[in-house]
Image 1 (tube, rainbow, N blue to C red):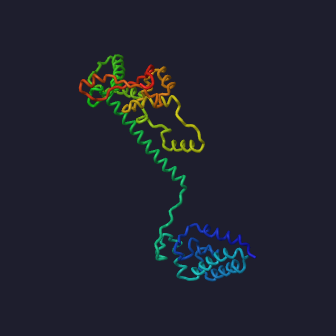
Image 2 (cartoon, rainbow, N blue to C red):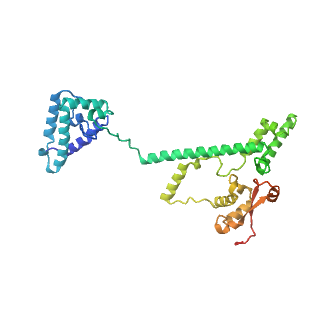
Image 3 (tube, rainbow, N blue to C red):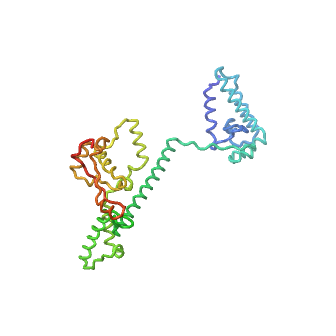
Length: 336
């Protein structure tokens, strides 16, 4: 008796023998299998005798009447494929169309009269997700980097032109401080070279020493998250992996107490989020904020906001930007 495992192996091997995948959704020929492979003969065999001999050999070997009762169903399925392959290859017209289709797999309409939509290549969902995340990460990185350079360029321009709170367009006290420090560097250089010191802004901004000093001072400014230079941890993909890691492994990824206190302090400045005001506090004030857990809603009263020069700017009729200062109210009781 024939071992049915050989039939199963043959059925599995048939679609893999031919290098080109066959699309035949309307079963004009042998479906997704190669008719030559089913008969186990070389592709495009023209000798009709060889085709008939191959068919007789396989039909005798795998006929349902010659297999065990439990294997009859599989044998019948194989015989249907065998009969279809023999029917196609013994007919000269059908065989020529099939040979043409093997050479031109995109011309299915010409040999069958039917259109079909080829199957799209299957991709791993994980790979697709990773590609999407990489694209989103690159987009966020580009956007953050663009904002960072735009802010630095504006800060350099405002500082070099000595634009302060009362100027139009409006600068800040910080831009004036940057300008003054850079101007001191410029004056020192002029004294060493025994050159005249220029005070005209339009001429000053063309001086390479002064502009280099401006850039150096701007590079020292501590920037907030909205305009900071993008880092590796800013990639969206990294945050996704962190979230997955946190979900599956239940690891604590909470911020440190110092980071929470820093966010609470800087959060009081709203429109001035590009600057890290936590650095303006003394070490004692920082430690006090951490000890009192100022990030908790019931302790937010500890952090006060003072506005330097508010009355002066308001009385002058100029409603531009003014300098905000964090005040740690150590003696203020809760509830006030």
